[in-house]
Length: 115
Image (cartoon, rainbow, N blue to C red; front, side, top):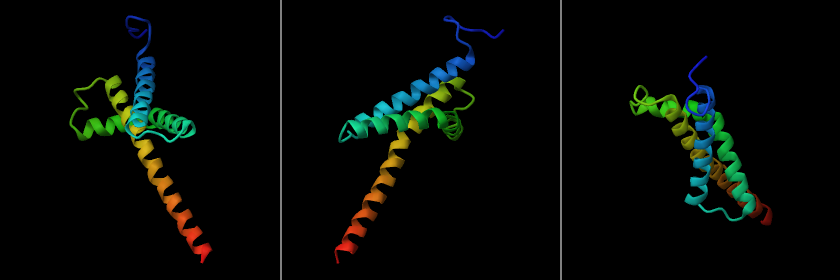
């Protein structure tokens, strides 16, 4: 049986805790960084950030650690935590970009229809 640490969690459980913690932290930072206009936007941003952080956290953390030359110096939990937070933060930037594209397309369509 693998070492379960002081409170009885396996290494896999610790990685999931780090992944969720990083995703939640990244989402919270994204909300503070660019304030949402309402509750609905805040909820959507938070949910998307958490989901993206959990899904892409491990891969993002590994890529960041490798690019910075830190992969051999960081524990797996640190890599996952870093990647989850980064993926969560980046999720809102990508959504913001897509939302701006849709808004611009809608304005152009309205202007074209008004002629």
